[in-house]
View 1 (spheres, rainbow, N blue to C red):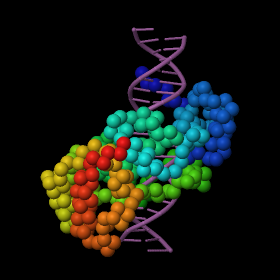
View 2: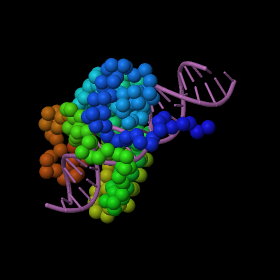
View 3: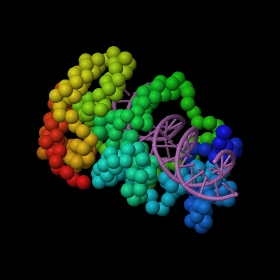
View 4: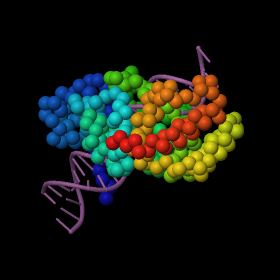
Length: 278
DNA sequence: AACCTGTGCAACCGCTCACTC
DNA sequence: TGAGTGAGCGGTTGCACAGGT
């Protein structure tokens, strides 16, 4: 019963929105609201799919949207809500005024999940692998947007207040943090890496060793840890070791020292479990 | 300087739900 | 009651850019 496509794609623009389009959309919605997204683009004089307009409005143009990096509190809330609600981003977004489901989803996949120690089993788990593949093919001269696409000069600059690399703080070694559910995934990641590169094999082996150590010897760090003694409250995202009063990973450290540092951090963090914040 | 790789985010895709007729 | 339609949601992709080699 093939559903009709949400819009006739022929002749419609795709890709990044130009300032003029934004302006039109905002002006139209301000004046008329959005009783019917499907009809809106035509009425507003936009060569866009209604769905696309809706998305643009909700995720970017809506006056209540809060731009910029997530605060520690917001991240903590996302972590907690995700634990309660799963990947129901819209439900999570409802608890974070000014944040959209899309934004939260992005933040989750790019920042938080990584910090929590990798794949949560859902969604974009294969991202790294795909990216790697893509990079390989891209250099061989592949992916470009369709011709209908906007040219790059029209591309939106990063939104106001948004630095393009917003990486917040410390990057955990996946091995050191890997909390129990993820061992399989982590292992496969490592296997993958082992296949890819000959260099650094010793490091890999060490990581794998560390990982088996962490899963065997560590008390399992369950999700409640991350939500109770929140990551941010441990200062793991925004502070370095000095600020914590803990000797940070020596700047010219060897990898072993790094490992030791993070192990120590995690062990100490484990003692902070009942520092319940939320 | 040139190239390669990883990251972050905006946008798209496809599915499901809710509603109407 | 079932088909058609619009809206919403979650997953995925494409691209720019930063950092590394």
